[in-house]
Length: 398
Image (cartoon, rainbow, N blue to C red; front, side, top):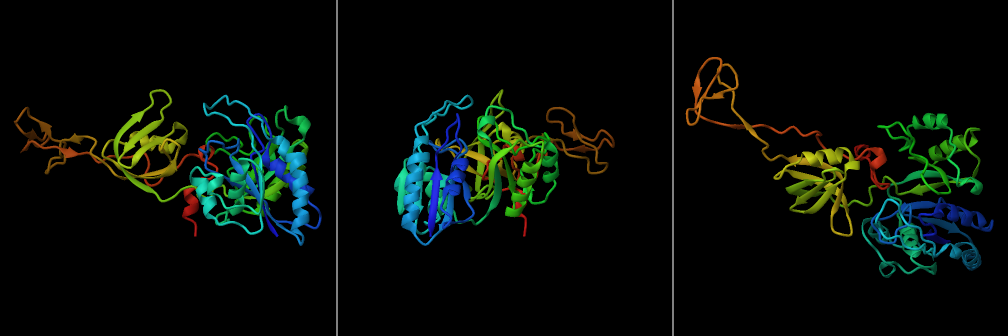
């Protein structure tokens, strides 16, 4: 009995670690009992992150670990090790792309969860990691160890189906009517963009993945994927598998931060909001929708509460935010005590007068209570959230 982890077999130009892991699991001898595999998303700013930034792990049960290790040794040399050394440039990011560096690990006992929590919140190295019972390869060992140390505190599921190899260059064919049908199931989540009405289950680009259906239950993910695959309007698949995932767990976020805004800069074209606060620099990207809109409404002196992730430059990327208190925006003349009309100035140092009853008052101003665009916590729309982001509505569930 033990735990197997794998990561970093893909690059921007191709490959897919979920497909490689599925093939590995299907190669195992019949005397090996395979648990529910796990797909674990990691810290999104990692310097050597893979295309999907996800690692794989699984619990395996057998009576003879040594024979299993021998099988893994052979499979590694023949099928996984050759996937290293590939590199593709990005057309949308300035980040330097690194070569694929597959890594695989075996633990006789599942390692402590602390490494997983570090791996979803910050940069980690192999030097920080628990030592595997057996390991293969390079940098992919980092994600592989994180995957097997995940404690499954908050779990969702994703059923992933892979395309036939000869169809990689063709457009994906998925039955849209079935997508519409499963979108109404209560256990299916994040399958459609509510603003645009478009599907979110199919990736873009040269990926072997045909679709990934996310659900809050294993059975829901499996049934939805089976319906899609069975439709004559969905292309034939190579296979599919349901993974337990840390997606929508919120594990990447620590405690919320209270901060006072010192200054705000909005990009003139891209509309990203950069916040200078007493708790450090923060950013709310335009794609964040409500978060960006609320951030752009702020003025110096406002107090906010935020949750987010620090990037490699120490800037907090805001994922959730609420306003705690407002600084004064502007002032106006008070109302008449008798007829509630807005008072008017009679001139410099001449006081105020009601335009209706003509009663006079001393010169005065009252502050206007600000009206923010949102009350309470806000978050990005479904299509703009991180894989790990836990919906605010889920935190209110009993």
